[in-house]
Length: 163
Image (cartoon, rainbow, N blue to C red; front, side):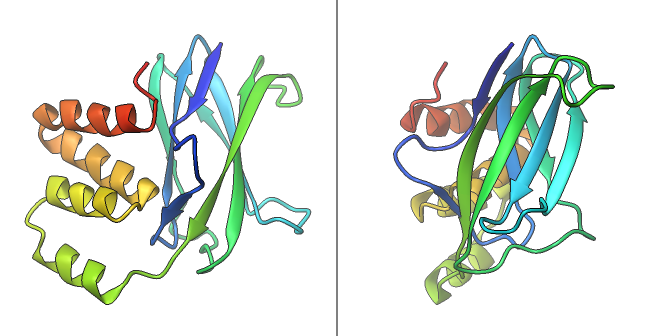
């Protein structure tokens, strides 16, 4: 299996979302386990097995009834590829990254209020270095307008996720 988190290589991604969406690329595997941990807390905040019907970009959005990320706090998230989804202890590989929630600035809030589309919001988030928010907005934009996909792929290319 091939597993790549869709995160920048040179820094930890940021979000303004209390319950962000996480993205990764998975190839030749039928399931993965997503885990979100607050450092220093032994029990994961979120742990969920995600089925992969086919190879490609996968995502996990934190549930509305789940915990919220705290502003200023770093969190570690992990995706593990499962050999057998019925036996989660059988892990082939895993990878991890970090996320930090930040408060939106007044300027960002103003720009987002004037945005007319998900594509516009994605561009604003990307310009402000809000990686997770940008990807989530691009994902929504692509669902409505597949021509946005090339723009999303160029954003991934900027952080060396072109393959």
